Length: 491
Image (tube, rainbow, N blue to C red; front, side, top):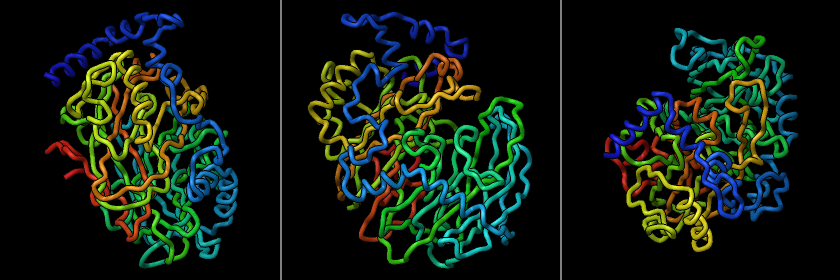
């Protein structure tokens, strides 16, 4: 029944999405404010629904409830001097050609790519630039129009043959002159640097995505340079692997932009404690919602507010030292993670007004009133269990016109998880609300969004976890109710 309903709605959208635009134009006035509640709630989520956490639009890390490690990480993430530091060292490199190469392809539409060709690889010959290791691939030339460039590379070795304790890293785009290039003009669709112990299609031990860039008042492009806290390192075993795609989001037929796919790693002490990135991929059950070939990307209609939850369990003891989110903010309004509770305790199974009345882990469409009533009681009664909270914040977007991005909106990285500890058997619930950010978003996507939603944690354990893998580090976390044949990352 659910599949046929989804197909019916998709058919309506294909005919011109008349139904959805009529619905989004429907005026439902708030009895006190007189505002169009539906449009306020869907298109301006944070203005219609109260955000219980302090505003993230601040560069004062001391205002947050952080311990010393988290405050250090916050200050390092938002330090604008990192960019100057990295660029200065990049610009003094004497570039040489190592014995590994990359495979390069381009596309104007992201569907049809040019035949694969070998791309020039250059690495910095100096080994004493503050223990930095640099390699770049290219140059790539693009002229806007949301064109694509794709790179895969393997057999990348640093100057340590056995294990690399990485304390600072950047994966993304640099200009030929040695300047870091942010978004816009270049959107890092994904840039994954993998450990040799996992497949090239893994989650990436060191990663950059477009929504990783911070607001200009909160570190800006400098946030793409990641740093571990003092005494910690991310351990990777060479040879390393790359899979990356970048988009030129300038208007079509813009001037030629030359840029390099770039890897920069600063090596530390082998005695460091592990600082390992693990990924919690969250998606609704029901296989018909997966986009073929792109798991765990799923489809969701944009005709209102849709929500779903997943229940899982942590499998080891670990300290979550830092975290961030990766999603598509134009489609995803809110992501919450509750530790130490289950769906029933949070009221998800209860009828409105205190609950959402959902009894499985599939997508469900809910009214504005239902969501508003539920969120109010959820934060009041169960807020203590919430350890992570992503909220589509107007204050954390930047509007830059004359690009290919819808509405010219660029959603920036936000802080969202407080420090917390996990133990073997600790239950966890992920709750997500999906809604479009504007009418133009609905029109540009034909009423169907293709979405993926990730919580990404940096953890430290008493032993070294294998770095991130396609199973979301299955030894770290697992969903309670896997979906045979359709789950990606659960067993």
